[in-house]
Length: 331
Length: 227
Image (cartoon, rainbow over all chains, first blue to last red):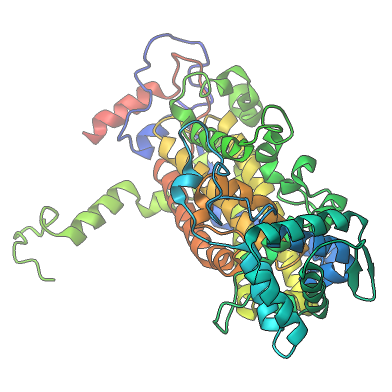
């Protein structure tokens, strides 16, 4: 008896005597099924050839995206006011990174949590970053060699009480709303800013030469592959996010599955990206944690489909299999 | 290592680990199952090709990835040949995912986990998940604007989940190492295991309505013959 002339669907009820049993060999499993010649190796060879042709045609015709990276230098040259505004926020401890919480610092209440479930808090500070010191004061300290005026401004700032430092940076930060850039420096309306304008314009000058790109990677080691500091610094400004928004790459633009230009991006992340577009995820302060957990659960659900009644029965209810095996069902 | 307890009949499976493993392999995965030249006649749908195209794309991904890794992460930004190899890698990723997803949906609607094939399905889902991570670290390793923005944007999710404490998406060296070595080893190993699972059990039979089973009498006869 062959599958072609075997019992047809709905022929009997109850546990079938020929149903699969654990330990059945393939000879038993395929009993009664007509076997035909099939060449797996040739199939793989043809698939290799076909995909090679397809990929070569796509690569030759469409190339691949490669928009050059943004540097601190290009940022400082293109948008000096945004650069200085960001640097002041780093110096005063008001930037996104300065108040981020784990893994960069211990800002109270900053870590995302769901009730008592706070994995970021539990993981702790693994990449400590003091934005004032790491992004502004240390690079300026290195750049001040041979520049007595800058050294003096740095000393004035570092020796001032923190309340006075805060007063200078706050006032200067507000004044930057009316800031203008000319001749490689940023000017603001007169005010009591202490040495802050001098520090900021010095930092801007170093950045415009490309020096700050190197100084932010300074770790005391010759080789360097960790770009955490410059990327966080640039991420705190408006320049980088504005460029991303222009390319439809931000979170509220389905950014994680997009790519620069008109190229396909990580389209396979559509479901992950989807959650960020709809309430309550789009407005929740702990949306990242919720979405990560949700995607973890959905992935586990997908893996366990064979054991979940309902989910495992959908293929029986939606007869796509009748298209796939139409020769079999035709008999 | 000589096994002094080998019996006169040469039946050493009880004490000789090598013989035991060989016995298991011969019983569970004979060469005729590993490389069969016959398949059930219903293995004639295009759905069966999605898996092999996914593997073909994976092979081209590895080949182009090895070339890119050999010349270093800067090469393709400054070399026309390098850019073309990167384009091959880029489009091979797209083909890989398109056909892997088609394979996944095809297997879902065929209920490919039936008749003892749940482990094959689970390994397949794990391969899919690791592939997402491999592609993600690949995008982070591009050293261009896209990589910068993905890193800045994605850090919030990894940090919120506590993963950022040991998986720093802003650390190019870490992402590059994970992308070119650790995750590809995982994918290749699991794909090999996935294929062995498929060949051990063969392709699943078409879905029968509850209560029916084709070839029931013949199967029963063969079981009794096996005893």
